[in-house]
Length: 398
Ligand SMILES: CC(C)(COP(=O)(O)OP(=O)(O)OC[C@H]1O[C@@H](n2cnc3c(N)ncnc32)[C@H](O)[C@@H]1OP(=O)(O)O)[C@@H](O)C(=O)NCCC(=O)NCCS
Image (spheres, rainbow, N blue to C red):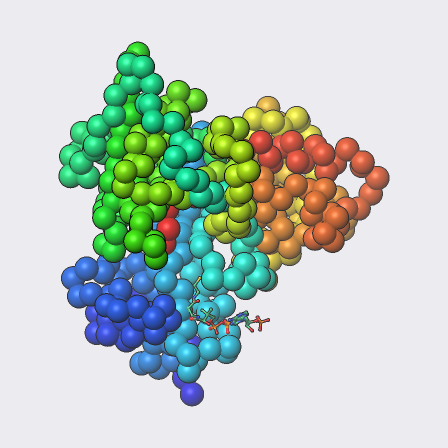
């Protein structure tokens, strides 16, 4: 049998890719419609002439607070059933990590089918999602004195510029939001299987201050639920205005479902006895330890240094000891290959969770995912202050 080879997909393989995807997600029509799909984003693992596994690369930058980091989203990861559990997906991911690291990407993001599957390969949960369903009757009906609301057109470049400005200002609160491209906006505002509506709210003093994108879902009892796909408010008054706008759909729907960052102001506004569900969100992987650590700022960091032993089978360039020094909110990293001892030791997934600020170092220690050597009781609280301070959030799907 031929050796597996990882390479870009070829135009004549479109039908094969379509059949792998439609089987994997039980979808019809297939994702790969001729002329619609950018094949340059697909990587396949082939055995001879036969494609066994495929994935798509979405090259983007992500906001990490005020910093923009080179990242790659992975989507459409699938192995044909007859080729599963032979290590092909793992091999494909490994080769793709090598390729994107050579292009200067420092992080990888994805939405997993299984957290455990990707954790073993070095990805870790980057943030949590708060899912809440409220009766529309519980929301205000008033958008606020002097405030206005208007629909925005996905085809209007001026409107898209306004949305992009609001979104980009809001996204800098988090670790992980995409720096959006026009095609990302298209996907968010106009979904192929869902009629979406987007409204902007404007303050009387400062103009555009938030927007909401939503759709309707029929309920079994012949009634409808509003699904909020995006809820972006720059401040508390914009938040109230958006809720008021949604509340004015009580003639069209009974309930509203929102998926929000876990620090959303709604937590402090909602009616009695509201229940919410917390779910794992996107996963993140550090593709290049040195470049990722050096590429962002650390507003909560106090100066200091440590030696960090990282174990990373999938990305061997990360496997080793790094001397990491924080100085005035930035970080300098030197490989220390000859180091015989270190302060911290963990695998790539743990490093990724720590880097995202999602996994506190003391929790990683308690879970047995981080080993500490030497006697530095201040080390973990200090590292937590260096890396933490922002929630992970990713609003785009791929
Ligand atoms: C998930 C999927 C891509 C795995 O592909 P694969 O080529 O069989 O995976 P690999 O053989 O490379 O497996 C890598 C490791 O994960 C394990 N693994 C494979 N499938 C798994 C599964 N369904 N659940 C848990 N672990 C799994 C393997 O045993 C292997 O472990 P090891 O490294 O300790 O030996 C494939 O089952 C698939 O296409 N599923 C349907 C589509 C899908 O869900 N895609 C993922 C979207 S995020």
